[in-house]
Length: 380
Image (cartoon, rainbow, N blue to C red):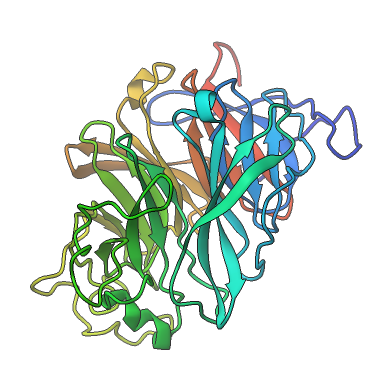
C-alpha cells in the first residue's frame, strides 16, 4: 500500500497537497506526511541549518527540497558520476560548521582507469543554493574495478575534525578477498581529516604496505553509519549475503571478518569463506539479522518530539520495506520494531530534523520524502 496523494498540481516540481496518514506503533500513533515525491531513486538526505533538505538521486542529481515540498532544480557543479547498478550519486553530508564554511560533502561512483570506485568530494554551496563551488575530490577508493555493486559510501563526521567513509568490497568473489588485505580500500572503513588528508593516529599509518586511511577492515557493504551520541563511537551496519546483516562498532585496526566468517551464506547457498560465524582475531557483530533487512541509512534519535523513542536507533530497511526501530541498553540491542510496513516501500535513508521529526526517503522510481511526527488526537 502507498500513501494516498491528493495532488492539487500535476506539473513537475509542483507542491503536493497531501493528507497525513496515521499509523499505530508500539509507542503510540504516528502521523506520516508525504513532503515530496517524484524523486527517481533518492539515496541520501541531510538538513541545512535553515531546515531545507539536501537530497541526492542515484542517477547523478543533487537537489534542495523545502519543508513545503518544493523541489529545486539539480545543483550545478556535481562531478559526473558513473551511474549504473548500485553506483551513482550516493551519500551527502552537510558540514557541522556549514553556517561558517558552507561545505557539502558527497560520495559517488567515480570512473577511472580499470573501472570505477567510491570517491568523496566536497564543495561550497553558493548563497542561492544552486551551485557548488571550489569542488574537489578528496578521496578515491583503491583499486578501481569493473563492478556496479557494493560501493558502501556513508559519510560521518565525528565532531573532532575527522570524516569516516564506509567502503564496500565490490561483491564479486575475485574482489571480496581484498576486504582482508591492508593494501586495498575494498571492504574497509576509512578515517580522513576533513580535507581528505590522513590523520597521524590512524592505526596503520606507520605500517609498511598498508593504506594509511584504513580504520577497520573485513567489512562487506556498509550502507549505514552514524556516531552514537551516548559514547561518541562510530556504529556501522552492513549488508550480509543470504543472512547476516550486521551492526558493528568498528574499532581502530580491528578485523570484522568478511569474507572469512559470516552469519549468512552465499546467494547460491554455499558457505561463506570458512563456513563459520566466529574465528579468533575477528570481531563479532553486536546484532545481526537473518533473514536480512537490507539495511541502508541510520540515525540515533536524540529529539524531544518523540520522548518514547529517546536514544533509539532507526535503520532503513530495503528488503524489509520498513523503518526498523531498535531499543538499546548500552551496546546491546534489546528490542526491535518495524514501522511503516503497511506502505510496502524500500526505505533508503533516515534523518532527524532540528525539531525532532524523522524523515525517510524511499528507493523507488517515484521516490518520496516522508515525515514522521506524533499523530494529532482524533480519528485516524
